[in-house]
Structure formats: structure tokens, C-alpha cells
Length: 392
Image 1 (cartoon, one colour):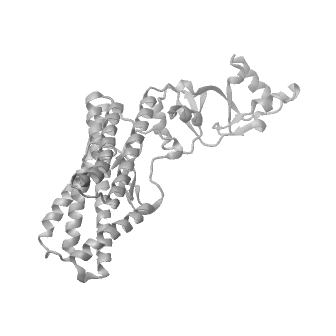
Image 2: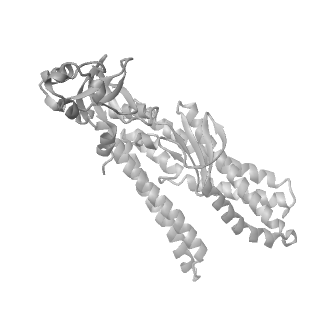
């Protein structure tokens, strides 16, 4: 699976993967084996070992080793699936942020990128989405051909038949046309390209994904009943877990799509607070007098510049105004400066999507310093910006 890069994430949630074991790097991005994968490996081993013992009772305890080997080969198949996404993305100019392998399979995540041409962006998304399942189907085909080289029921044959059918299932299921499956993102891209509405494509593909999720549970429960059999509890629980993941991910995609649509039309001027710059050695009288002369009174934020002329603090206007009038002529604003930590400079005409793209490179920024050419004109409190932008 892939994760679309046009999500409105706060900088604190910078694109990347969750915690786990870094087992390598691809295109400068980490390949993370999430701790949950080890749970998946145990489950796969426990479920596969009885089948191996049934086919080859002579293996004894070795059947568990063969079952674990299958879990590892399945992991390699998922990795190749995600690697295909990464290679396709890199080929069309996307920057890979992380590849993660987890209990549900895995995903490839890309750094946010603002694509001005929506049709080109949609085509890129389609290409990235379909290559993963295609790789799985190709691996299934190779596995089927390789099975003929080994004796039936031999250990290599057992592993090949299991991996072959697993890859065929991965390829077919991932091509189903519902988000979060790759086929869903492919359908989203086609609708996006045809209607120029990424939001519409996401909503339609997400609803198909919800229908598919319900279909998994229906298949596990109703199909046995139609045959006059009792549903298998393990199958029902497993299909329900998959269905929950699909439903939750589809709903999450719709939420992000709403945020992305809001981001495209968001007016940053709603959160730009007027500001002026003052050097650290300016007197309180000079600074407050100039701010008051602008006619905006205390609403103007005063950004204090350090010795190198870079913003580093806000003036505490309340504390500075408490200084006796006579002393204001000599005291500098440096003693009443309140450092504000990380910041990023942006032009006055920047759009919300481009601001978010810029913030991926400065994830710890708390404020944006807005510039008109070389003149400081405003400040954006990024927490306020994200609170408004991401509000449901």
C-alpha cells in the first residue's frame, strides 16, 4: 500500500514511519520493520505449521522452522511490493520518506510535494499505486514456474506453493478498487484525473473500500451458513480485524481529503498577525512609539532581531509598557524579549499547501515570519494555523 503525500499533517507529525527496527535504507529513506511484524510472524508460523505437519509428518519439529521460513519469505514479498512503490515514486520525482513493514503488510510513504498540474499528479499517483500488486502477481507467476523444478511435497516445493498463492492473493486483493488498497488509490487517481477533483476521487474510492470491508465479514460469516456449515471462529475474527482496518483507513482517507480540500482554498491571511521588526538594542520608547504610530495599537506583534539581524523573540509589550516613562528612553527591548524557538520565513503571498510543504523541512518550527520582500510584515502562530486548518 502507499500513503498519499497530500495530507495536511502538522510538522510535529512529519512524514515517516512508526517505531521499529531499521533494517536498511532505500533512496535515503529508512526501511522499518515495525514491532508488530513480529506478532504477524508468530501468527503466520502458528497457522502454517499444522498444514506443513499434515503434508510432511516426517518433519516433526522442523515443520515449525519451515513455517517460520514461509513468514520470512512472505515478508520479502511484501518488501518487494513496497520497494516497487518506492522505485516508481522516485522515478516520477517523489521523495521517499519511509518504507514500513508491519502486521498488516506494509506501506510506502512519500514526502509532501505540491504538484501544480492535477492531471499529472493523478497520473503519478496511479502509476505508484498499481506497480506493487503487479510485482506480487509477477512473483506468483515466477513461483508457479519454479515449482516444477522441485519434487512435490519437498520443503522447497511447500514453501514455493505457499509463497506463490500468497503473492497471488496479495496481488488480487490489493487490486480491489477500494481505499486503502492499492486498487482503491488507483481508482481515486483515475477519478481525480477525469474530474480534476482529488476529493471526489477519494470519497468514492473510500466508500468502495468500506463496502469491501463489509464484504470480508459477509464472506466469513454468510458463505459457510449458505453451505449449511458453521462459520469458523478464527476466520471470522481474522476477517473482522482486516475489515476493521480497511474501514478505519478508508474513513481516515476521507478525513484527510476534507482537510486537503480545505487547505487548497484556505486563506492564510486569516491567521497572519501584523508584526514589525525591531533590533535588540532599540529602546523601549523608540519601539513602542513606532508600533503605536502604525495605528494598530497593541495588536501589532514586535519581533526582536538579534545581533545578526535574525528574529529570535517577541517583545513582551505588557512588561515593557510598565517601565517608567523616563527609563523607556534608555532601556533596550532585549531585556523584555521572549524567545520563541523554531521559526521559518515565508513570503507574504505563500499558499497553505506550499506552507505545509515548506514545514516538512522545518518540523520543529512554531512560528512563521511573514515577509514582503525584505520587510517583516506578520507572524503566523503555527499551532493556531493547524488548529483551524485541521478542525473537523
